[in-house]
Length: 175
Image (tube, rainbow, N blue to C red; front, side, top):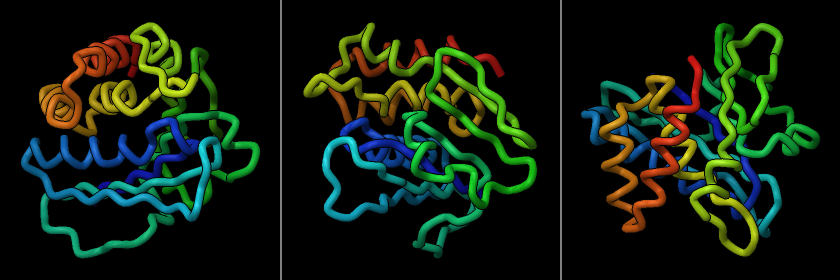
């Protein structure tokens, strides 16, 4: 089972990104679950979401404490949350950043999702929405296929800017 923990802030699209990722995995013929963990959060508050992907039915519906991959949609979350806590040995980190970052002992990947969202004008209430660009980045990491990423996005959103944002993130990622 491959387990992913997504750290974001309310209003950035982290919860929707988890749903999109699970939907894309289903399109790839996998089993997947997605669930958020938050209380009465407000826009801008830290939020965490979880995704499990496997070749067999998934019977675990809980928080993920030892993920294979940690996704950080807003680096400022790392000031208040230990996003690397429990990350498995050999685990990977993806961070929304225009610049590479290092995380001792873990493979690190990055893409400027914020810049991509702003370029495509994927903005709500002044905040860039990062859910579709991150799906493109995760497809580049091999978590899901690019075709399934596109299918999941089109299933949820009619606006093609979302597909363009995912494609741009896929192209920008260096693996």
